[in-house]
Length: 182
View 1 (cartoon, rainbow, N blue to C red):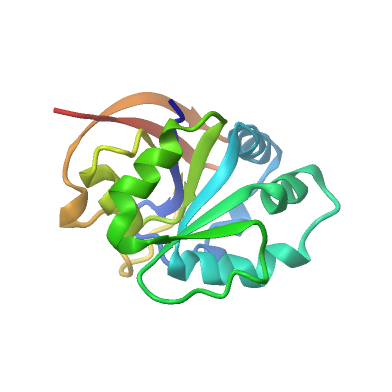
View 2 (view 1 turned 45 degrees about the vertical axis):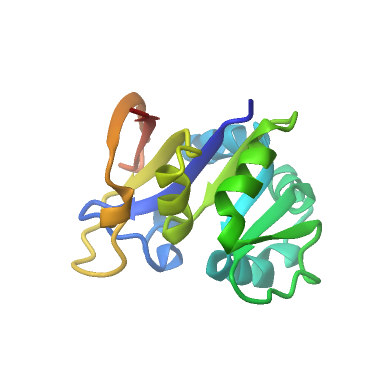
């Protein structure tokens, strides 16, 4: 069975919105290598509509390096309850938000690599609640933002097991948690 891994950047005080404004300054060779390894272990991206629409504006214009080429070639699944224009970033399949557990459960049973979730919001809440999310990879940046979109919401409640932590020279700490079911 494939593993679903949610990877997201978070500030020290637990906020996730607008990571392009505060996380890029912490990118360095060792964290890039770790991100590349994680991403190439996956052959599918699972995204919420808002995250997908933002990514679809940027990623198709990137390429010419192994990381971007891999991301652009991956199967992409966008969970949405309203129409989504998938023409800009292929291959993309829309999953009806009302069928999240069924469709993603079926996807998880297929042969293949990991399924990577970028961002953290209602999609990860729904996956965790349905028992489909296997891991959180939280890239904790040494930034205090003060306010914003929280990493976790009440729907995310659950018990986690820390299975790995890596500290990078930039001060970023990558925390890997496995969700405990039961």
